[in-house]
Amino acid sequence: MPRAALVTGGSSGIGLAIASMLRAEGFELTLAARTKTKVESAAAGLDAHAVIADVANEDDCRRMVEEHRERHGQLDVLVNSAGVGIAGPIDELETKKIDLQLDVNLRGTMLVTAAALPLLRETSGLIVNLASIAGTSPSPYLPVYGAAKAAVIQFTNTLNRAEEQHGVRATALSPGFVDTPMTEWAPVPPEQMIRPQDCAEVVRALLRISRYARLPHVVIERVAAGDA
Image (cartoon, rainbow, N blue to C red; front, side, top):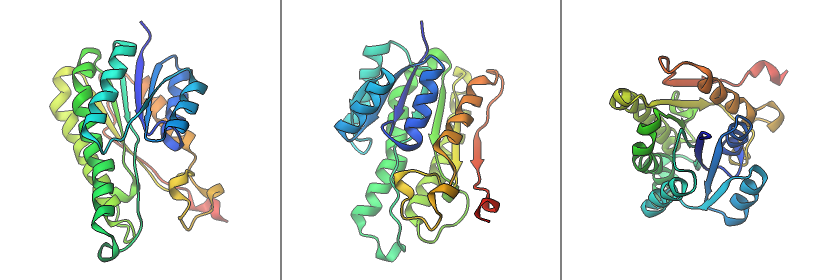
């Protein structure tokens, strides 16, 4: 039976790049995202199953995993790529914008993972959680996003300890600025940013290593020398 993967935030950016790589590696795919037209278009291009879902919604988190199970029967790779970052000093952020970032970046990652674990245990599967370099070093204008991503890194470490007996491995991926719609505000030109495909290549490497090895956390730094 072909291996199968579920990718949240799979309609664009890093999620779509990872999904495209997984399809090239022969995986059956489920792509989940909030916008119907975008996720259905991305899924059609990859012969994938599309699920319209918001990871900030608890019922949607469970439903996307159940739809994947009904469609593919197994889950070998879960990619938690759905994310949102809102820049601004903490004293200027509205509470709803704080809640949104915590719900999507952290709570959603936890809820989707919790729903998917029974399937992942059956295959000794891989979990890839998209964190951020903002979760490893202070970013004054991304206080909530950075805090949420730091928590994702810690959650990933905890998953590795808790799921070791089942052979489930988890990696937190922490890139710097990546050329995606979410970084349009950034002070770095897109052509000098990390490519989404760079993140996908790291995930490809995770598929290659033996079941006796794991990479709990991978940081992808932007090469500033490219600014010259």
